[in-house]
Image 1 (cartoon, rainbow, N blue to C red):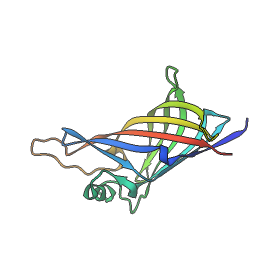
Image 2: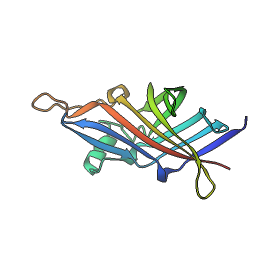
Image 3: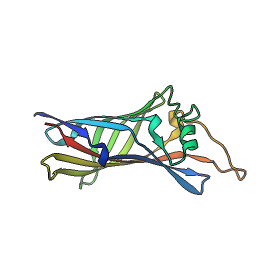
Image 4: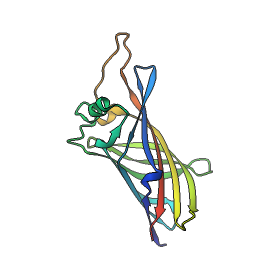
Length: 178
């Protein structure tokens, strides 16, 4: 079967995360510079070879001081480790309706760990300009300390200032390449 190449449409995609702050609320952040590409057999995304990267220096939480702290050696250490990478290794259908588990390797700070994420496949459509598009929602949780993001502080009541669990939400839209 012919190999089909898909390029990311970054204007219709997002990479966001949430983490508990002071154990009473959430802080939401995003990466504003990221890229992904896929190669499939035909339009079968269960055969996809995907590459995904996010630029650490593009982290944005709406607060410059916090963004600088996230880019520092306390967290991502953007100067030494400028990218986050994800490489899927296996897709497992879950209950039909376009839901899957994607297993793969997530690399942060040059530490690679296997992760499993939930994927909802939105389908493939032809847009009004004649381009084939495919959409995905990817969600999951990781423990930031597994990837060397060790900074922590404790409130006077004993709660963590920043939780270890990070919830990930990614929306990706790909365009079939001619």
